[in-house]
Image 1 (tube, rainbow, N blue to C red):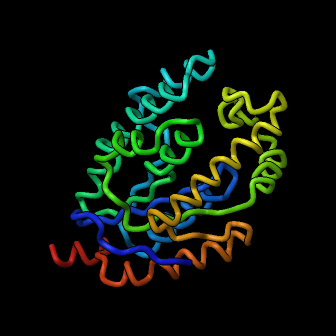
Image 2: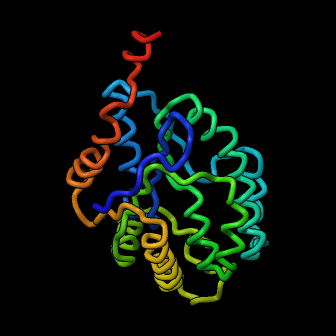
Length: 232
């Protein structure tokens, strides 16, 4: 794993971000890490992408009716993220929590660029979002994510497969092509934004052990609930 610089923002909490393709295993790892952090006595807040109630129904309706252009798709998710940031991420970060994010602004950077939006324009929209303390990028071959998706029997959505972009009339083929675009964008971001790259082809246990080891130096002097109660 490649470490990222610490304390990129001025808040007392820490911001831990999990990014990667659908089916990369990042959500599983984020949940496991959150439980581990809690077991060590830390205050943890978990949040995930597209979880704001402000525009979620609008996004669902737009997707269902196929009304979202790449630009409207981008703008709606930016509004969703801004509300999620103000309501879910910033308060616990200010309160000194460990905030675990299943996807952050980098999801928009990758997806919107893959859909043809100008990367600089997208960056500007999300300029209010501070740099995380860690960005764990779960890198896995596209073919493996497709295999995992099919094995789980989860339906591949129209937009997840990039069907709106006219890449292919075949759903699995369109999925492979669009996810390959996403991976190229993520690989570019991994270098530019100094992600901690995780080999997500390994076992759940091996990956989790590596994540914990990566965070130990950061957590060494980070306050626990017991310490806060004692100091208070």
